[in-house]
Image 1: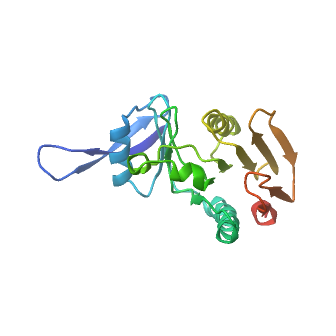
Image 2: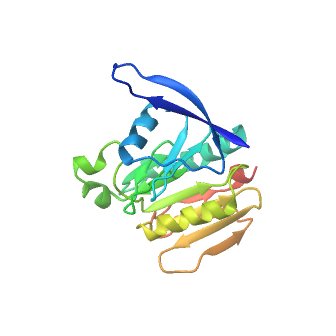
Length: 210
């Protein structure tokens, strides 16, 4: 099987030329941080990520079920953020961050404390802020493997995240990641608490499971 990747060439002339490349799934494509930024700017309709080793990950647009579920999660996080005493900065799935290990990742929803955000220089904020969010959410879609998302969640924790949720609607489970603790697996929970990281934030999972 092959996947289609739209490649952008930058020749001597100022215009760009778009080509359609058939890329076998067994072949990995590696890009530099600068090349990744250029690709992201030219392919805003795609959900792009880059591993710490430089491998380009191309995720197509989600289906309506995943989009609806992710909207519910981001919406609940926004409502909490809007009313919080110390809101910090919240982001949706369209936002990518450069982690300390060099990977560029885009959680489905995330939050960064005001203290952590204010500590960044203007250069560090850049196009993709050089920071790992304090709180991250990954929502499993039909095309996601559980293993790949578990590895991604562990990467967040290894790079500075304090709390993470891996929400799996297929099995109605949630894996809760906390610093220095074993991953907790919840079966069909009705809600999730932001604990001391996001005081007062409670995610109602009815719309996610529905």
